[in-house]
Image (cartoon, rainbow, N blue to C red; front, side, top):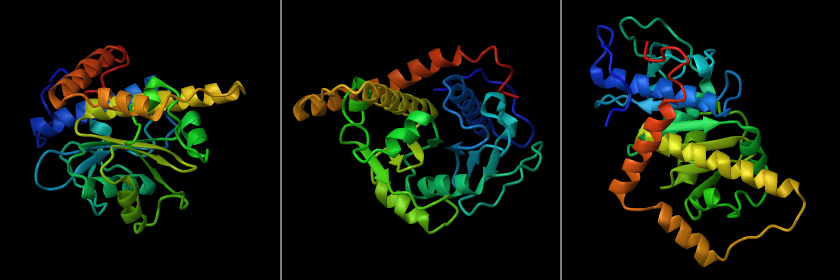
Length: 259
């Protein structure tokens, strides 16, 4: 279901790719709206429909709040830039390529990948116990959250195997001492995942800062809540689309991200 207003794509770009570009540019702006950016760093990618295994990622240096569909760079899983008519040459963050290509190569079920460096996400990533089930937001990820140990700036391509291994079949992962990573079968789902994971980290940092003893619900309650979040497929995807459509209204006045 397409949730952004369609416009005629530039010559040489299919309607399907242009729709993904518009949705991905919107996601960049929503991440900026919710203050999940780190200046020009971090990255969000989306798979381009088709058999070529291409994906879109940000032009390195463009701020998230100003991202447009035409600012996105199309690359293959080897990091080669794919020339697109009407789209000038762009730069790609090497660490972004390493992280995102790893997921897109190994997880064809995930069409969109989001990586952030928020203060709360980094703080929880630096805590030995990781994300605690102390909020309803956190319980969405109970038993469904992976961890990847810090190895330095992600410039070494051989780290891709370990990223993929640590992610497993989950859609969300905390990169130790680094930040957050989520994937989604659709762009709306990826937005929902990063929003909840970020809010869960914010709640944990705030709760721990008070110094009081934390209340952790029983394991069976955590499992029950996680199962409630993992409702049947059709209802879950419809909910993501509804939340996405509502969120788009937050950025309609920010300029034309569809250009």
